[in-house]
Image (tube, rainbow, N blue to C red; front, side, top):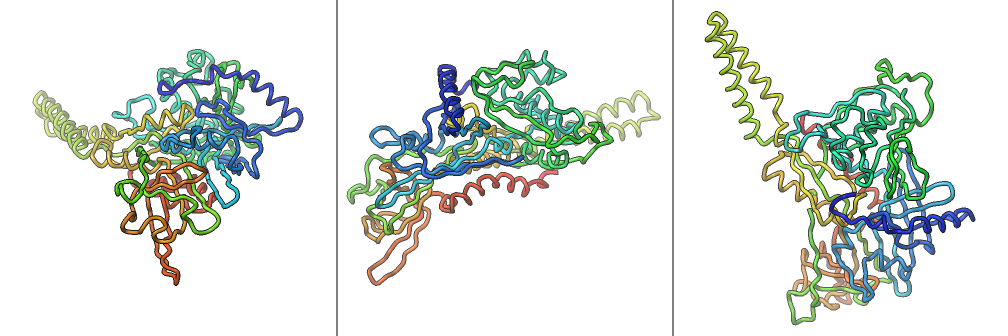
Length: 539
């Protein structure tokens, strides 16, 4: 288990909870539960008004549930105490999971977004989540998983063999780097003797060590800090493979008893053939393609603290806080999006000064060696000096963009809020150790932080006056479901009417004011698009 989080799953009564669920499933019922960031069930989500959920092959499924505003789970979802107060940082960063289960299947989703709707008569909270497969879009595959980030001496991690095992090896090596790096020194990562050394309690995410097939098509894959989902995409399609991510819970059957005994909630990753193909042998003669990927993604945390004093005309530094009473129209919609990543790696290039010193030092060293050889064997002096210069150049090129080429930036508070099952991070291109890297790291963390967004129309002066009390960029608040949400004025527009000016306000992240489906789709696709844009930025 992560050292940064407290494991609460050990004290939970899994036996009683599983027995109660199975009794419901035996009667044909479906159960939907909200779990905390430790995958420990918190409360049921039964009694929802409407909903839909699903899964996809080699992509993340999604869930959309609409709860009545007075549902017992709403205070938990909004991180609200009995007095209606909420911690804005916890609201935006604390992860929850949604577990949907019947007698025949279990699917799990990360709570990604909340949509709060309030009208004159009713209120509701819509929960949007993304499936476990999204993990692969936030799993960087290091160039050298067994080496420190400062000295990634391999330009890329190149693996070849039958497709199923190649895909598994990439994931296992990069998860071992995070959870138990000593395993990377062992020769066979799949043998029972290797797995007998695994500290299971330290692995919230695990790859199945038992292979369903050893004869899938042969492939060559390489990665230099690419995301797993992007790296595997073409191979999975060509070889007819499925990467599956399932949630194992205490009380379930052990998935690989010959290798490991699970004791706590575990995200279990497996790779399976979609269909049996008797023509494949798993040898190089079955090669499907060589796939070269190159680089991707980035992130920092912004604390939100709501001033206890609201604007009353006397305290000009307090925030304007709008409520439904101030707004035109019968419906108010507010979106809360959870933060996604707590780690970002920036790099791909060593700082210019490092490359220059490597080149100069290598040339000087080998030219000196060449000159020494020339002194010992004068007839060969010109050849020895030239050879020394050549070797120095080659060695310098081999080390170029490998030392100090990557830097990592983290938000430890966000990592704790996300819990042990969090996404492992994203990558963005740049110079590893440089001021621009620092800026890129903070920008990356900022871009994946949680946010609040809403829009509405008010009459100017009801109760705040545009220009005197607020302008674009000012911190602000909005009340929904009895809770004050901290945000800022992103935009305003004035409509001139015979009855006076109306001001249309957009608060918070403008992306959240799209439709929920489009917003979630954009969230899922953003990383892939970023990878496409920078694929060829670093040779």
